[in-house]
Length: 576
Image (cartoon, rainbow, N blue to C red; front, side, top):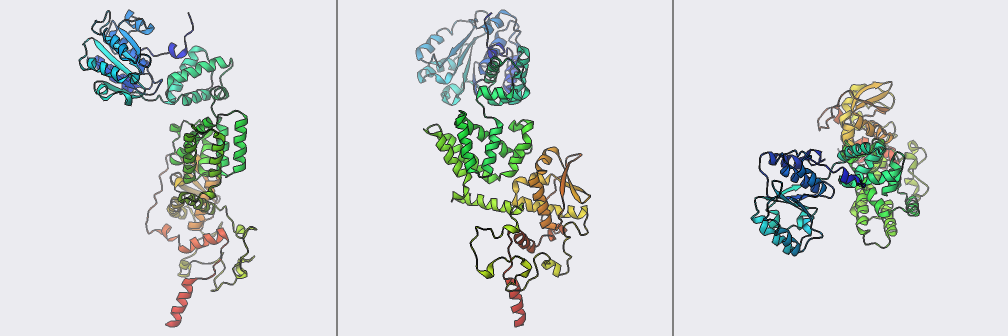
């Protein structure tokens, strides 16, 4: 027997074998069992999702010797003849090559003849949207007054091109793209039966590359089976199907996050030297940035289809890139991807886009200004700017009275003020005790818990993309001077990155004055989210306006030159 391709050999034979379309197969099975078979059906959806296969299964169920039945026997002469395409009661027509009105008229002339062996004559017209307007009008008359022994099944990938008068006379079924897990399970079954050794990671790559088309996935598996005699690996899939290695996507995204224009240009040069399709690379890069976006927005990454070994690195990139900046990346790359169809020099187009992404200071738009402000705020909040950087070498010289002295305590401001480090807040002057200093003071886990809502409130205002992850944590204890947070596994992977731990530590120090090392542990159960409320508790009282002033002083090396509120108070006292 001659060789049969995998997608034909493993074509589903019954409704139960059709993957990912249970909303359709169940409806058709119930309709057959209840004797409510329509005279015309419209199957529409993406390629490779089972439209023609379902039409054949419907024809077998209706014309089976034991039928009409929702489960055909696949053993009788009628079922076997439909499988091998020799049945005279089931006629398949490709509208793409038989679109003229004469060919449709020839088809309709055979309709009056009754079924020879089965219960009904089934006409399956594939790619029906390719018919001409005259052909549609010719078919319309038969659909308006169909013979009792005839059933039409129209299949199309573009239902919007079918004229409304045809649509209104058919029962429409929309086929969905088959999910990657369903495709992966089917591929694993076929590979095992065919003796094709393949890694699970390779199956995952194929299932995502197929974009919901099981037929395409089976074709790729067959091609890979001929590509190597060894066990098929992820590297084989990437090499044969022209996919982009995930390492390249992560590396290029890291360069974008660092605004490394020179590194990015060199990266593009290496891609061109290796013969990588830049348009495909941009497409895969957009998919990768979408995964980063999903990681910032949701905690469950199952819908993104990211392999487990990449989730940790994806979480790290999601924490490094601000949401507004990430949106800018996606919009810019999506624009050049659309322009790439008509571009004569895609490399130049890509390099110009890289310049826009890496040199955001050249963007004078409102969105560009907001992105730069957000980066400055992020750097200040995470302690990236220290007081030692207050007067860099590139900063123009200022007048002597405004320069920053080596020792801030030696400076003489216009209105005498206490040194910055031990300066009490106004609430301290009124009798409220100052918050405990770093590594000292009298505090316990309860005081940290009281301050925690205010910490979350501050994070929500400054870093909204991280708030949901932080809010899922719960301070459980102080252990050897270390604050322990309990989180679920998915949240713990995100929160325990060095950047996020430092952010929490800095915020806790700012809000409550507690400079405590923080570590994460897995919670026994799902931790309760700490609510952020506008109450009048102790946590609200811990954040005073002077705390913001102190943050600016510590971060940027600023100095109080004149305290207007103090001078106004003194002048009012003298007048009285």
